[in-house]
Length: 273
Ligand SMILES: Nc1ncnc2c1ncn2[C@@H]1O[C@H](COP(=O)(O)OP(=O)(O)OP(=O)(O)O)[C@@H](O)[C@H]1O
Ligand SMILES: [Mg+2]
Image (cartoon, rainbow, N blue to C red):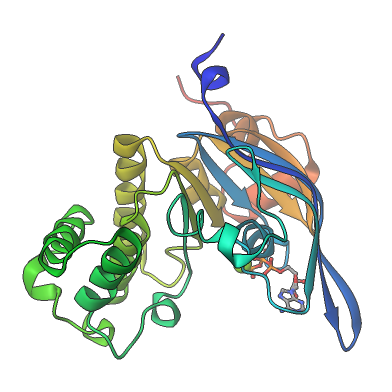
C-alpha cells in the first residue's frame, strides 16, 4: 500500500451539480463533478473564468447564494455537508475547513483592527481568554511572516499592503487549525514577487501542518509549483485530472494543452532529469 492510500479520505464529492436561477433562465455552473481529496494532499483546480471553480467550493463550504441549487453529495470526513443546516455546517466551516478569498478587502472588516478580527475568532470559536487570544494571534501573524507583528496587530486593514492583507487572511484561516484550506485565487491581485512569497508560505504551512490544500487558480504554472495533483475544469465539468507531471508533460485533452500554451508553458517538452 502506498502512503497516499493509507491517508484519511477528507473530502469526497460525488455527482455535484450547481445551478443558478436567473432572470434569463437556469445557469448550470457545476455539472456532475466527482472529486476526492486525502489528508495532507495539495490539489489545484484550474480553468478559465466562468469554468465553475469557485462555485464548486462555495457549494462545499455551504456558501452558495439563495438563487443557487446544489445536488449530489459532499462528504467531509464521512459526514454529508451538502444542503445541511448552518448548525451542522458550523462544526466544519472555519474549524475543519477554511477558505481564503481573492480579494482580502471584501473579507476583512474595514472598521476593526486586524488584531480584533483575529482575537474575535479565537474568543468566540475557541473560547479563549483575551490575553491568550492576543498572544495566539500575534504568534500567528509571526508565522505568516508579518514583520513587527505586535505593532501590526493594532493596524486597520487599509493600513496594510495587499500582500500583507492576504497574509492576514491566511493567518485568520489558520487560527482554528483546519485540516483543509481552500484558497480561491489568493494572489491574483498581487504583483509577481509578492505572489511567489505567498505561495512559498502556503507550501511551507501545508507541509509543516500536514494540512490539505485546494488552490483555485487560472494560472497553471503557479498550480504546478505548489500542488501534487491538478484538476482541469471547463464549462462546469471536470475535463482532466492527474499528477502535476502528467498534466504538464502528458496532457490527454486538447483543452489542457490549450491552457498550457496560453499560459506560456513550452509544450510539448520532456521533463528535465
Ligand atoms: N450568483 C450567481 N447567479 C447566477 N450565475 C452565477 C452566479 N455566480 C456564478 N454564476 C455563474 O456560474 C458560472 C461559474 O462561476 P464561477 O464563479 O464558479 O467561475 P470561476 O471558474 O470561479 O471563474 P473565475 O476564474 O472568473 O473566478 C459562471 O457562468 C457564472 O456566471
Ligand atoms: Mg472564481
